[in-house]
Image 1 (tube, helix red, strand yellow):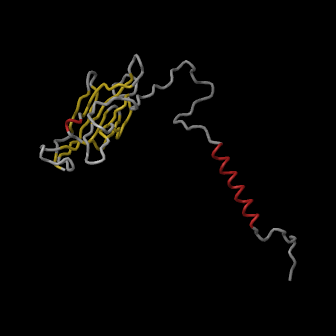
Image 2 (cartoon, one colour):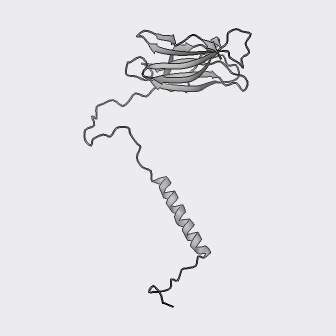
Image 3 (cartoon, rainbow, N blue to C red):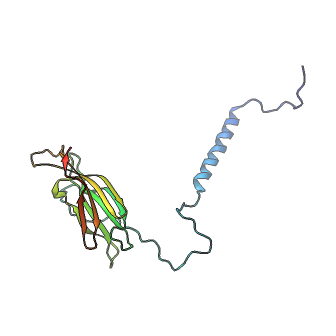
Length: 193
């Protein structure tokens, strides 16, 4: 039998203390990685020393917190189900479009679509347009905002006899700003669901 050129290692058998040491080392690495984080990512890289210090910070779109949406919800609160931001009127300041309904535990409450902007004097968000009124009994699906055009599919009812659970009309719509107001266009006629 040939002898190994390497002397026998003293630690060839694992003992509980080895597992404790390994677990402690791993826990230390995990704890360290939660403290040390990389910088935030940006879509564009900036060249060092070429930033204009006098350039204004990006204008933040208005938030929906604290906005008094014109809904009659009774004892429940208004719920912002969907929202999107973008410069809808081309003024360089972003608007927020919010789909809002009453936070009901039962049924399908109708949605409203509201356009919010910041007040020039206070900077607080305010509603500047109602695109869908909850009184129209519509539910908003497929909500998108792209290139200044807002798109949605509206689910509605052909008559008051149709139960709230089961809308029977489906209408794809788009809105765009014409310089004075939002214009609604319908791609095709409403059709049954």
